[in-house]
Image (cartoon, rainbow, N blue to C red; front, side, top):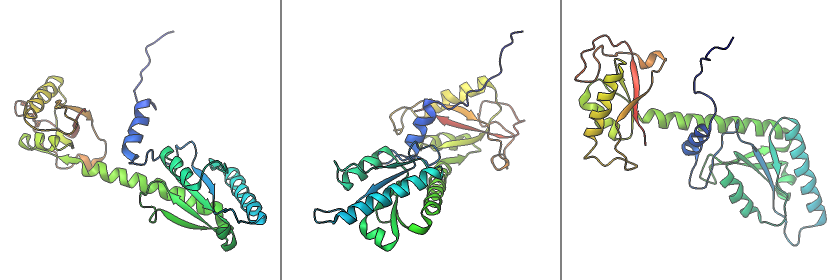
Amino acid sequence: KFEFAYQNSWGITQRTIGVMVMVHGDDKGLVLPPRVAGIQVVIVPLGIKNNSSDEDKRKLAEVSMNYYMQLQQAGVRVFLDDDNAHSPGWKFSEWEMKGVPLRIELGPMDINKGEFVMAKRNILDPKAGKVTGKDSSMVKDVQRVLEEIHNEMYLAALKERDDRLATVDDWKNFSPELNAGKLVLIPFCGDKACEEQIKDKSKEEAADVEVAGGLKMGAKSLCVPHEAKYKQNCPTKCINPDCKNNTVKQRTLFGRSY
C-alpha cells in the first residue's frame, strides 16, 4: 500500500554547510568545527635548516610519523604535511585557509624538550592561539584541545546569536529591532493572513532605512521556540496592531531574509 510520507526539511544540506562557513569563517578563510572537519589535525614538521644534522632530520621525521600513527589509531582525523617543497609559513597559511581546527608544530628543539606546539584555528591572534603539549601525553592533549575548540566555537556562535536576539512586545519596537539586523521574538497569533500583514508593514517601514545588505524585505516567521525561557511574560495580544487576537500563548521568532 502506497501512502504519502510525512517529512520535514531538517536534513543536512548545502545551506547548512553555508551557514557553518558564514558563522565561523574569518578573514583567513574557513574555520571548521572539529567534529565535522575532514581533517581535524595537521602536523607540520619544522626547524630544519641547511646546517641541521642528519640525526635531527631523522629524529624529526620519526617523531612526526609516530605522532601521526598514534593520533590515527586514537580515531583522530590527522594529516602529516611532510612535503619539503614549501616552507612551514606557506603551509600554515594553506591549512588556515582550509580551516583545519588544530595544527601541530614540531621541531628538533621541541623534541629535545619533550614538547610540541598546538595552534588553534579558531583564535586569530597567533600568540593567544598557541598551546604547549607534552610528548608523554600527546594524544590526550590533542583530544583535550580539540574539545576546547569545539566548546569555544559553540559558545562564541551562541553569544553572537543571543546578542542579535530581541524580545519585543509592542509594534513600535518591532521594525527598529528588525532594521538593526536582529531576530525578534514576538507574540503572534499564527494566522497566515496576519503574517502577510506583518510582512507588508515591516517592509513599508524599512523603505527609508538603510539595511545591511541593501535588501529591505518584510519580516517572516522562522520558528516557534520550544524552550520555556522564550515563552515567559508573553502578552496575549498579537503584536500586529490590526489583529484582534487576544489568545496568544507563546512567542514566535521573526526575521528578515537577506
